[in-house]
Image (cartoon, rainbow, N blue to C red; front, side, top):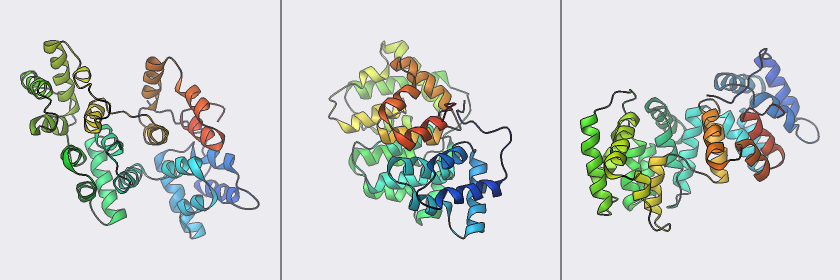
Length: 298
């Protein structure tokens, strides 16, 4: 479920653009006015605002935001204003250019998007950067990381609910054998995680636990300094946590399933995500995040 709150009566796109322009003028920027507009418009509305703003003022709204905003607040507003596919392309490009073995952004995008969304992100990557995501992933990563990430970012998984239980049992056995032998970079292990539908993988993981007694996460526990294994484990879990991840998760999931993520966060941590945001962030960055989380006062 989405946490985005859009007014019952949305002002015209012309009025939104005029108000945004007003927020940029004079001494200082009216950050609260920017939040009140952009944090309460859906993707289609934000796209129309960008188009109308450019037509009216001869400048991309993103450039105006870049000139007027700073730091974490600038980043969350910029990411939120981008189209979803364009945002994923931007984040993926940033991840390849700043690649480190502890960087899990590419995995997050590859594993949490639908097949259609991932394909659209790859197409947006072509349009924006004049090259393919897979060539940049192949160039900037190496070894086992490249071996895992390339098939993940190029996957086009089946999206249906149908599962093959016989296949799930046989592939659970393969996973157990490879993990028991610490063959974490094995081609079959990677093939299963990178190509099977999410429903099929879920069935395989259930068979794994039923037959071998442990969640696969438990059997993948190892030296915390093993960053490839950490990425492999995160591939199964499909979720990450630093401040950058907070911005990414909120801006990319607010219109999709952030309510579910909020509920799961509270279940795991016994603290509401809203309260954690208030504790760990501040200022306009905090206000923007709270607005996207559906916080009534933001």
